[in-house]
Amino acid sequence: MNLDHYKAYDAELKAAHTFFEQGSYDACFRHLERAHILGQRYSYTHVQVHWHMLRVGLKRGDRREIRGQLVRLLLAVPGSLLRLAPKGNTGGADVGLFKKMEPPEDLKPFCRN
Image (cartoon, rainbow, N blue to C red; front, side):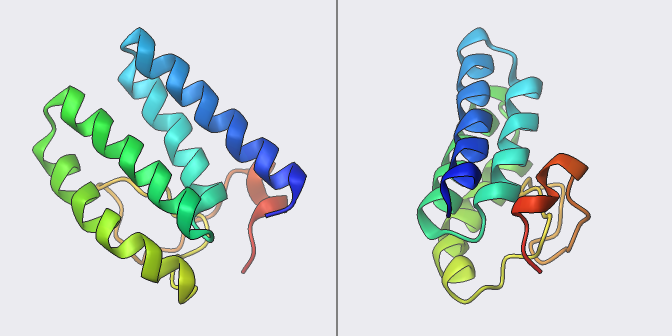
């Protein structure tokens, strides 16, 4: 991940942390989805985002999200290493594991095919 890519990822993660601390879990999750798009090709950042998504699921008491994130935590490292993470996927339990999605315009420069 080059420096500009990392800065974009880090900005999304920091925004997510701010909203998490405020109890604004919907806003937090939106930033985590953007961080997922940016970090899913790299094992560490991929696992990091799913861990934070799990924490949001726990705070919300959302069983579907909790189950979904537990599965995704197990698959994040092999998915990144084997380049199976689909472009633009937002990483929430409401999205299929292998669903390719169109990334937001501002994130497209960081997304590879």
